[in-house]
Image 1 (tube, rainbow, N blue to C red):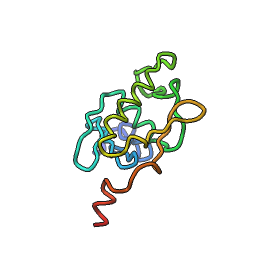
Image 2 (image 1 turned 30 degrees about the vertical axis):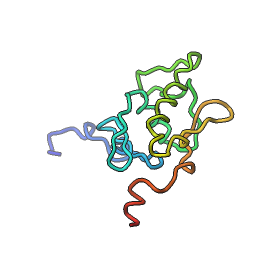
Image 3 (image 1 turned 60 degrees about the vertical axis):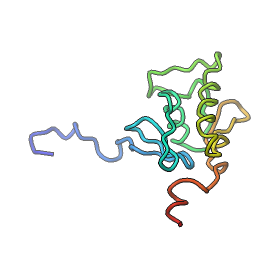
Image 4 (image 1 turned 90 degrees about the vertical axis):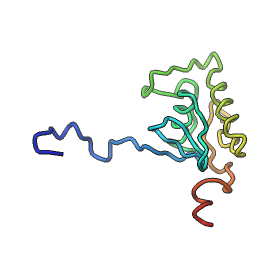
Amino acid sequence: MNDDEPAHLFPDSDTLIPRFREAGEVTLDLHHRDGRVEDRWLQFHPREFELLWRLAEQPGRRVTGKRSFGDRSPARVDPETGSLAVHVSRIRAKLAPFGLARMIAEHSGGGYFLDAAAVPRAFGLSAARSA
């Protein structure tokens, strides 16, 4: 940064959004707005990506139709239409070939949460590094 640039144009590291986020064995890439398992891209649609990004933000925390995207996204999900369930179903279908569909669990009180404990440890960078 040069001395002529105002400091407010460059937020400190506490306010930056990370480029990558781990969702179990899935690496989410904000730049590509997609996820991958090892070196295979999953081809998420924008709302699928946003939902999984949100779930991965706090694994284990319930996300409902009303709170699925929050104020951060122009996307709106109407809980009455079941569109959240449709997005979850599509994400699960893309995760199924890797045995990861169960990582998005249905909450007994409604909504969904990321259950990283349901993810087999045979995939991903952690398995590759331990070899």
